[in-house]
Length: 365
Ligand code: GDP
Image 1: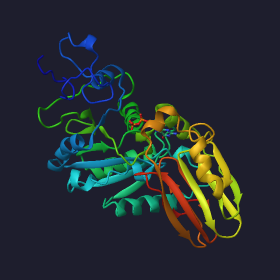
Image 2: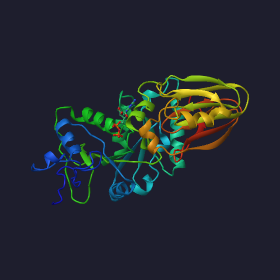
Image 3: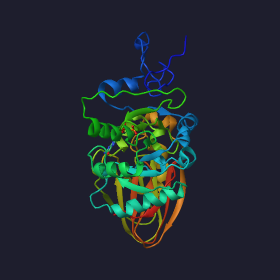
Image 4: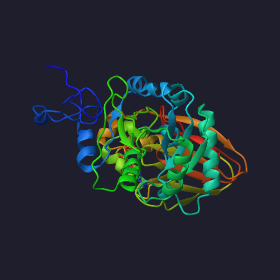
């Protein structure tokens, strides 16, 4: 069979994997001027759909930004900062300026200190070796912060293109769809252009006569817990409305299980509160430390769920990490799941799926 390229983004057309670049259903292959499903939806419904891509392909594809001049907008999920930060970004985008955008603001409790959150995002980026010009907090879903961000994007881009980059599931499509509605109105049909060899897999949305907003495919990051669990479980652990903190008074040698996806052992310290910020639907189970291993062994997947059966096939083993926390109010962060806030002198051991490391930060609340 001849290789066919999408008339919109230039990606090679394939009919096997709907979530990857260039997918078109077999039934559409007979048509002239074939568009991949992603470009088709954009053209006819003004709607961006995310497609995923592996590290290597992503690197190859997105590295072409190095040769261009433009503003890079890196969208991350504030619930999964570690899993959604693209550590190879500086290598990929060369000297182009980067704005860091923390999405899904609407999920955080209203009492969240936004200044601290911005500081934490800034330092997380720095730790990952990413130099950012500025940090913004938005909710693509609710629209918070979008206006300010759009203004700043206009200022920072200095008439050049804007590249939107992000890992899968951060809300990149939701964000772009909002921008599209805002700038062109729903009725206007967007046409994309394809310059062979340069914009493979990129989708361009014109901003003015000379520049465009460019959607790049979402990279899959192996540090995202989302990568290891079923769609059903992902839905369960992803908060869908503002998180209600759950407070547990614990004595030392007690354990909290977050479903069966993570665990916190209170090893040493005075009795105190552990304030848990997770999706309201995620089951938190308290037990004695001495019983915890046995309970996990016997009940992961039922009493301690998610994981469901499908996720259990792919979920890496839980591995422990120790943290000694002194008086300052501190959050223990389980990337992609949530966090636990403590304020005394405590030693904890936390268990998270191998490769999805927990970390600590100054408390946001
Ligand atoms: P993409 O893979 O990065 O393109 O992400 P999507 O735009 O498809 O969004 C992934 C999931 O996050 C979807 O379930 C969205 O509804 C949800 N989402 C996106 N933006 C927001 C937001 O600002 N707030 C909340 N609560 N959910 C969001």
